[in-house]
Structures are given as C-alpha cells and as structure tokens.
Amino acid sequence: MAKSAEAFRSIGEVAKLVGVAPHVLRYWETQFTLLRPMKRGDGRRYYRPADIALAAGICELLRDQGLTIRGARKQIVNDKGQSVRTLGTARLLRLRETMPPPVRIDWLTRLTDLSRRLRHIAPRDARWQAARPVAIRLARTMTRIS
Image 1: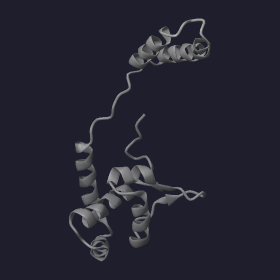
Image 2: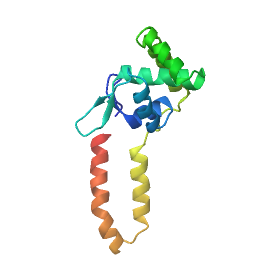
Image 3: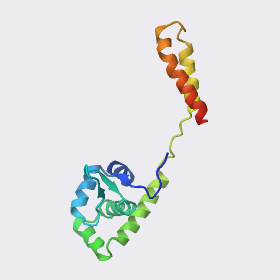
Image 4: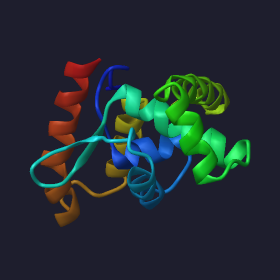
C-alpha cells in the first residue's frame, strides 16, 4: 500500500526520493537551519512534505546548479526557503517521471508456481508434509485477496 502525499517519511525513504545517502541528509541538517525533520523520542527522523521539498531543493542547488553550501544558505535565507522548496518540488516531479512503475506482484501466478513446485514432491514425502499447511494457508489468503 502506498503512502499518502502528506505522510511523514523516514530518512531512508527521503534519501531514495531525493537521490542522496542518509548521512548526507543528516549533514545538511547541521548546515541548513530550516531543514529540521521531526524527531521521535528514540531519535528517528520523520520528514514532513515541506522538509522533503526543501531537501530536494538543496540537492538541486548543490548538485545540479553547482552552488556551495554557503551560496545555498544565502538563497534559502532570501525568502525563508520558499524558492528552494519550489525547486525541490520540481525536482521530485522530474524524478518521479523517470522512475519505472512499481512492479505489481501477481499473487495468482505465484500461487500457481508454488503448486507446480509442490506437485513434483511425492505426497508421502516429508517435505510435502512440511509444506502442505503453508500451501493451504497461502491458498486461503489468496482467495480472500482476489
């Protein structure tokens, strides 16, 4: 199930969306005061949609436009990061267009493949006895889903 556009994202998810490593995002948090994700009590970071757009905009400035951190900081200060968020949103939209569509798992095909594999095992074999309850549970689950 896909997350809503307004859902908070973990640092790993944001790193994949923006196209940088998680440690780079952590470093940017120290350099750009506006980039402040929400932190839980256990220290996990959760990025709001505005934080994601800002991180993507910072990536655009630093990587694509070749600005230094100091230059990017100046651009963020000019309008409290609004232009950088706009850049980031445009970058995310471009990246989304170039990403391949998610692969849909066809559960019926997987179940058919499993039953073919199990057919080759003799019914009295110990492997069949061990696999039979799992196959039955899987078949019941698949009929409920489809």
